[in-house]
Image (cartoon, rainbow, N blue to C red; front, side):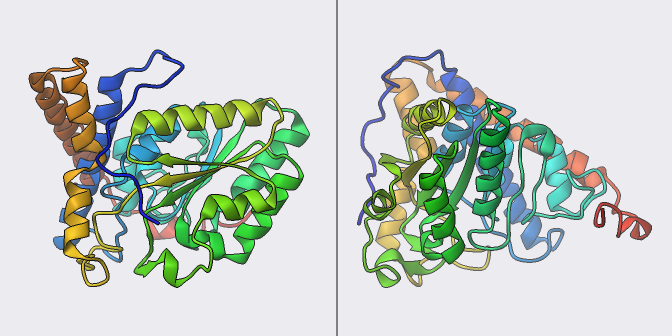
Length: 332
C-alpha cells in the first residue's frame, strides 16, 4: 500500500475558523524542537535512544487541534509533537527529556514517558501499544461518568498486530467507547514494511471487520487531519462510538538517531517524501492560496527558532533531580 504524497491540500469542508499561520508555526516548532533534540544527542547531553517523528508533523498538529483541553491523549515514544500540540510547555518538555528537575515529571519520566495531566496527557509509552489500553480506560471512564470527554490514542501501523491493541479495538467497538484510534501509517514498523508482518495490509478493512467506523486520510495534510479528528470527536461525544483513522504519512528520519533510515528503504523513496513534507507542502499552499506571504513564512520560521531556543535555555538552566527524591511519586 502506498500513501498519498504531493497532492494539493484542501481547506476543511465545514470552513471552521482556523488560524492557518498558527498551524504552520506549530509544525515548525515541532520540527525545530526535534532538530535540537538530535543535536543534543550528538553532543552527548541527551543520552539513550532518541526516536524522532520528522516528516509526520501534520498528524499531531492537526489531530490535537480538534481536541479539547479536557480530552485525554496517549501516544508512543515518538510523541513529542502530540505533547506540544496538546498544550504542554515547550521548556518543561525539553527539561523532562534532558532529565532536569523542572521537567513535566521532575526529569524522572524522560523522553519515553512524557506526562501532563493538566493538559489531559496520560503519557507517552516505551511499550508498543502500551498507550492504547490507557486511552480505552479513559474513554470508558468518560462513558460511565457521563462526562463530555473523549480520548485519542496515537500509534503506528506496526501496533495493530499487538494482542492488547486488538483487544482494545474490539472493546471500543463493542461498548461504543468515546475513543479515537489514530494510526500513523508510515509504511514501516521500525524497519519492517507492513507487507512483511501482515497478511492483510488494508488496516481499515481489518478494523471494519471488528465493527469500528474507519477512514483513511492524507496524514501529511494538517487540515484533513483536523477535520477528520473533529468529526470523530463529534461522533464519540454523542455516543456513536469509536473511530479508527488511518493517517497515511512517512517518517523521513530513521527509527532512532543512529539509524540512517535508508538500509531498509530506497533512498529515492525517502527523498521523494522529504521533498513533499507536511511543512513544505503547507508553506507552498499558504502562499499559493494567499493565506500568507513568503515574508510571513520566514517570520514564522524565525519565531519558531526563538521559541525553541528559549525552551532549551530554560531546560539547560534547570538542575538535575535530587537523588533523595528518587522514590517520590512512585508509590501511592
